[in-house]
Amino acid sequence: MPVQCSRCAEQRAVLKRPKTSQSLCKDCFFWVFEEEVHHTIVSAGLFKAGETVAIGASGGKDSTVLAHVMKVLNERYQYGLHLILLSVDEGITGYRDDSLETVKRNQQQYDLPLKIVSYEELYGWTMDAIVKQVGMKNNCTFCGVFRRQALDRGAKLLNVDKICTGHNADDLAETVLMNVLRGDIARLRRCTAISTSSGGEGVLPRCKPLKYAYEKEIVLYAYFKKLDYFSTECIYSPNAYRGHARAFLKDLESVRPSAIMAVLHSGENLSVKESVKMPVQGTCSRCGYISSQNLCKACVLLEGLNRGLPRLGIGKHHRLHGKLLSQQPLTEAEERKLKAVDF
Ligand code: SF4
Ligand code: ZN
Image (cartoon, rainbow, N blue to C red; front, side, top):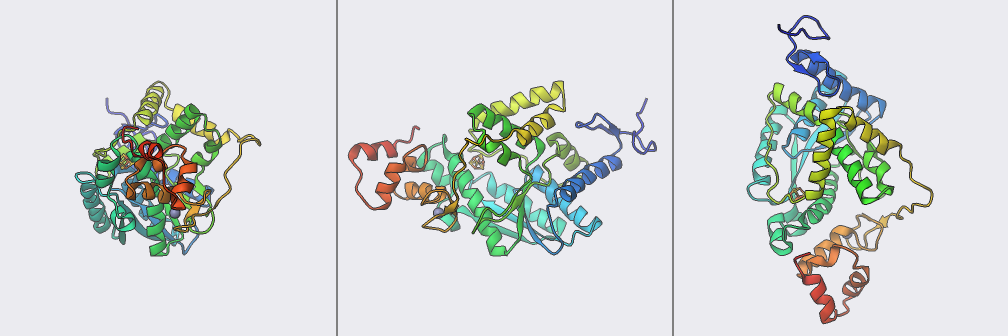
C-alpha cells in the first residue's frame, strides 16, 4: 500500500528522510530541507543584508545544491544578498575541465555571475604539471593549499564580503574523525566551526550553510530537483586515509543514522586544552597572505616546485626553507632529500 507523506498527509511519500526516517512527499522534502538550511543560516547569523557572497562552485553535488538553495532562500526570505559563483580551475584534464562546463551551465540555469580563477594564472602551475613533478602521493597537499588561497584571491578580485562552501555534515564528521585519528585536538573546534571570522588581513570570512545537511539528503535533493551536477571523482585522488574514515562513518550511519550528527557535535564540544598552543598569525613576507611562518605554505610549495625540489613544503624542513630563501647553497645530501619523489 502506498505510504502517505507524514507531513502533509495529502501526497504519496516518495522517500524516507535519511536524517529522521520520516516518510515524505517530494514537495515536503524540498520544504524541510530548505527550511533547515534557512534555520542554520539565521541562527548562526551567517549573512547580513547587502553583502556580496561568493559561492565556491565546483560543479559537484554539494556546491550545486548550495547555489540552488542559496538562490531560493535569498528570494524567499529576502536576505538581500548578491550571489556570485566562484570556481577554481586546478588544471586537471579530464576532470576539472568537464566539471567547469557544469558550472557554466549552472550559471545560465541560476542566472548568477561566474568567476573562474586558475592555478595556472595564479601560480604558473597546473595540477597536471604538479603531479608530473611530485607524483600521486602528496599532490592533494599542493592542491588543497593552493585552492584555499585561490578562492580567497578570486573573492578579493570580486570584492566579496564572504565565501560560502558546500561542506556538509558528513564532510565535517569525517574531518573530526581524521583529526581525532591524527591526535590533532587543536583543530577539532576550528574544523567544525560554521564560520571563520576574517582571520586578519587578506583572509575573507568563510561559512558552511550546509553544515547540518546529510550527504544522502543532498543527493536526494539534487536528484528530485533534477539539478545539473558533475559526479566524477578527481583522477588524482589518492586520499586513502580519508577514504577509510569515510567508509567507517558510512558503516556507522547504516546502523544508526544519527552517528554523523553525534560525531559532528562531539567535535564542536571538545574543548581545546589551555596547553594546546595555537599558532600566532602573521602575513607571508612574499605574497602577503595570512601565515604563521615567514613564508606561507603556498609560497614554500611553489618555491619547491620552481626549483625542482618538490619535498620542500612537505614535512618539516624549516631549517632548509631558511637556507634556500636566503639564497645559501644546499649540500648535496640536502638537495637529494628534497628532490626525492617517492615520498
Ligand atoms: Fe586536488 Fe586532490 Fe582534490 Fe584532486 S583529489 S582536486 S588533486 S585535492
Ligand atoms: Zn605567500
